[in-house]
Length: 222
Image (tube, rainbow, N blue to C red; front, side, top):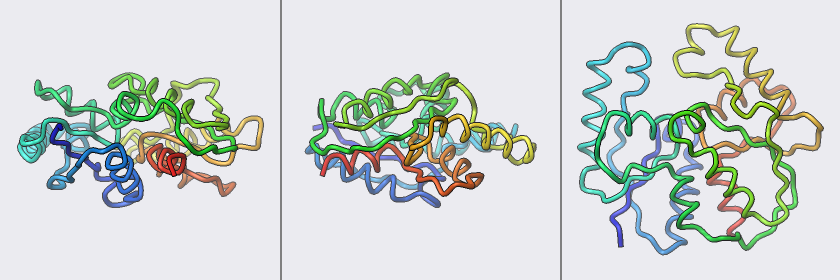
């Protein structure tokens, strides 16, 4: 059995811990033992801000904290893509990619509802794990999944972009939500990236539900 670690990015660890708890339950339900290693930032936030020496130092610390594990599953495509681009080690894997391979072909519980799925920019352009997220949702019986007309549209967060251009970031988030809610009757927005979910939830004015995919999959597995 592989020595597995789950990495909860800063946003998950501090602001959306229920996604990490759901992921742990899912992994253990599949018969795997999983550990949470030392919580070390991957360095992406500093790399995006041009502080490359600090980003490199944090990335090396992250790799050192996880070197004893055969495989590290990351709850976020942006961190996954950032680490992969700066390391040649194998076993750095997006959580959705791993669940698609190791999880059930069909989840046991029916969820008769309509959700809209948001694919982060990183999941489309860097890790290309958006396909895995879409396929996982198709494995939930009776779940109606609405894709946006422009699946590659940014939600407006973009890390430091939202700090440098707050008005534009908010407007992009509102436009993204309007597109995801087209046709009505959407109960929640689902994504594999909590950074996007946090941004969209912050600009939401309709009281939408927001779920990390791990939370939804856990619900469908019970």
